[in-house]
Length: 435
Image (cartoon, rainbow, N blue to C red):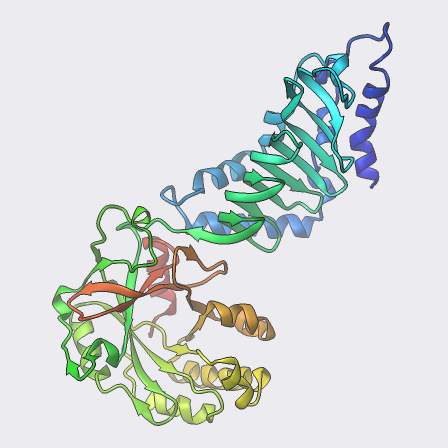
């Protein structure tokens, strides 16, 4: 609150003098505009460091082809430039320094809205069109509508150091924008003040892969081979807008994960031949185990290790976790499930000397993963979330479609994209694969 008083005091003095005939004309450049910023000195050093790490992570994983990259890089290099841009400069007319109900304000002025928030802005025909708006939580700088709401392009910088720049509608984030805080950087689409996710642009620069099981060989009663020499991704699936694809989809398959086992009794009869054929085509290959909640985790790990091949350069083993709420409860609850998952992971990691991946869906992340912070800290995640919006967590792989099309494979195929570009893929292959 003390900081807010310091923000408002110069303007209260300005307003109080506005109706004195002999008062020297006041200019906005006469006001110390640093009072309209949230100083970094008011934010803890630790929080600043956390925000900087989030920014570094985003910039490391994106490039100029990604939506919003230019906005984020500008913030990284110059900080917040919107407050200086939207703060009116020049002579302040006395008639604009009060919230009149009659008359017409034109030019630079000071007012308050119905919530009592102080606004320094630009008026046109008695309507506020843009400016700086302050309250005890932070400062908005940008375009406004006739109701003095944030509307159009603008930014909001909170007293805790978090920042948003992008599009607004009726005082809510709406459309494209990016926010950064000590916890996370989000760049993508917003709907009614809620972040929907990043909308990825699909180009040949990205690293694509597939995951398969017996269902890529069996459709009904018919069986089909896979033409491993001619695999190309030709369609991203019905949930992916054609506008997000650079030209026609025609991408190589850079990696494949093949189901090996399920529980402690089920094997994929096609695993061995698919594994050998993929390696012959120099496609990076990994194996996964479908985890059965409530079944002995040690037996499942032994079963996977016994029936799976691990050769130098293979992708890390993956544990596929897809239980329903009812399955988790029947298997002893979430605590028991995570204990069993840790058992499987530790056994497989000791045997292969490689850290496994965890495959989960977005609902599992939202509902359960916070119960196991150690897993979030140690392991890389592969997340299934179908549609336009990339999952809003750090991840290694994203399964974006369950109905993609791949030449050489009959029927629908799960499509995946690596979280990064070639330089990050090279690092992943160097650090995470079977040695």
